[in-house]
Image 1 (spheres, rainbow, N blue to C red):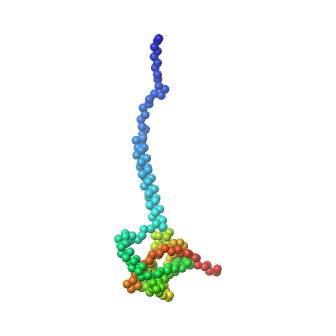
Image 2: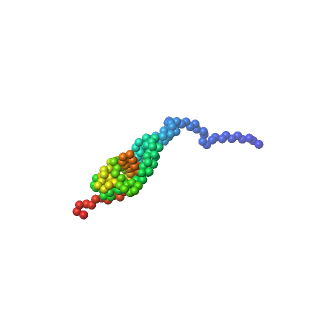
Image 3: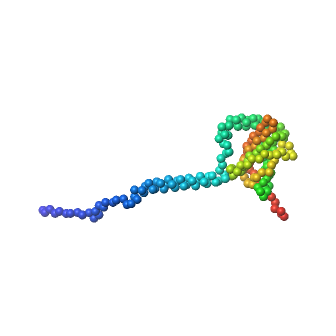
Length: 188
């Protein structure tokens, strides 16, 4: 038998592949792109959060936290007075968004309270960063205090009331639905 020798030549000879220019920067560039995109998205989120009127930080919240025990004691003394509070914003709003805000205070025996000072801080639930504070003046009716305030929106409003009479201090906070009705147009 005769021996035959075969020579095999590969159809695709091995080719040495060298990375092209810039190939060594591909992965670091991908990582930097993702990090940069993240920074941009967080900047957009921070901008939107600070421009939205419904987001707000409670003024002086750190000091309020430090004085929490004193505030709780003041609330207990206030509750012990037995005073009742009715907040009655007028439903009619003028063209400037003003309406009359009335507060009625009665004692435990339902007698009108003659307060030396009544201060109300208030804001609309959807516009929490637009807080307003007003000192109410006495009305002709005993125990009732009022002022014209800017309250143009229908919806839930937060009221924080502080009434002072002599040595007694009454504090209350409440959330209340307020309706809005436009004034009648002349000629109607």
